[in-house]
Amino acid sequence: MAVRSDDFNYIRDLVRDHSAMSLEPGKEYLVESRLDPLARQEGFSSLRDMVDRLRSGPCGDLHRRVVEAMTTNETSFFREMRVFEMFRKAVLPKLLAARNRERSLNLWCAACSTGQEPYSVAMLLREQFPAFDGWNITFIASDISREMLTRARAGSYNQLEINRGLPAHLLVKYFEKQGAMWEISPDIRRMVDFREINLIHDWPFLPRMDVIFMRNVLIYLDLEAKKGILCRTRRLLDPDGYVLLGGAETTTNLDDSFEAVSLDGARYFRLREKVQFMTPRASQIGG
Image (cartoon, rainbow, N blue to C red; front, side, top):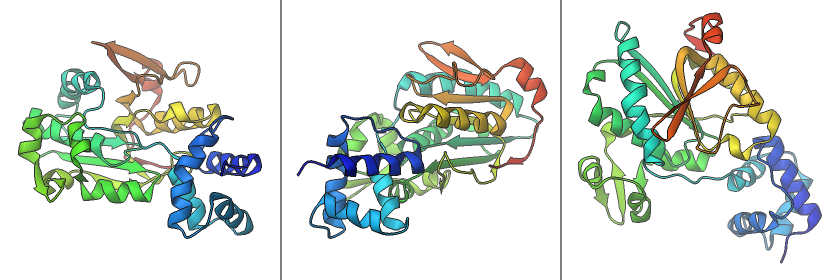
């Protein structure tokens, strides 16, 4: 049964308030395709019955699961390889030189979904930059969805997920076949600290970041949420740090503290020199 307009409006408002994701008119099909299975899983006879339950009670676990079901979790290993090439050729060598004295590096993959992006970064570090061995590396990956984080921590992927972007030599070196699934090595898994973080709510205390991956996140959010997240990102970023966004995302007309630097079809964002000068180094920042 097609979703009622008042039910769609309720879901739209719920998702916006808890994730800032915009559901425009015409996305009723998306609500049906993502929430019908959840309604059946939760024992409701229809999506309409589940929405009625949501309306009748205080915000709780079911509301959270509905919001998580509506978020987009598209990801793959080494998604947009040119971005990883830029990271390998330009970003990491500069950080290796700039942080050589303190031998410390802080990375954050926000909205990591099922973990392919942070594990891609971890394998790249292990393969291409043995000079980082012995460094104090803090590597945080976060997502709004507890279900996605559970999968990411497990590091277990089906053949279709493996086929999407993972080079064969890395599969052989870092994965082990377990039945129908491929499990990433514990050594790589231990490199990443997965945490639940909702980007539109207060952020927990985090170390000052050298690199922030926030790819293909802002594109789904409303204008004020984008501005707020970029403001917090600016405060969290080390003065000479790097922000990597999705190919269709930008800071233009959202936060003029950043400037884009293009390289071989990819780009990163950094703080403008004036902002760098005004931004002190700090060990931790929150909120």
